[in-house]
Image 1 (tube, rainbow, N blue to C red):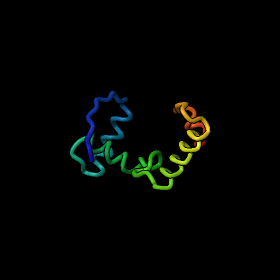
Image 2 (spheres, one colour):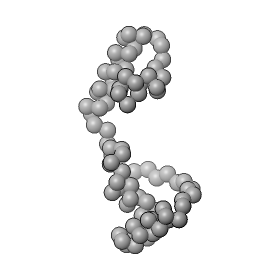
Image 3 (cartoon, one colour):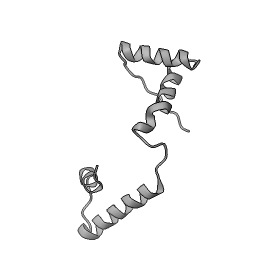
Image 4 (tube, one colour):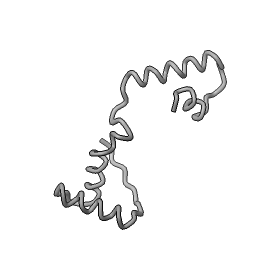
Length: 85
């Protein structure tokens, strides 16, 4: 697992939530509290690992697009549209 450092400005409520998570789980700092929070609720928004079926579906969408439009590059908006996002 790679680590990324960032500086964030958070409001008072978010600070209190991270403080409660830190204390509840006996974590050493709010950075660990943020990791715990992401671990607990992150999969509601993003899958931890990409499923093979999803990758295959996206590759088939792109392949179909390229066979139809050949040398035209696909924009992210077009990919979102044809993938139903």
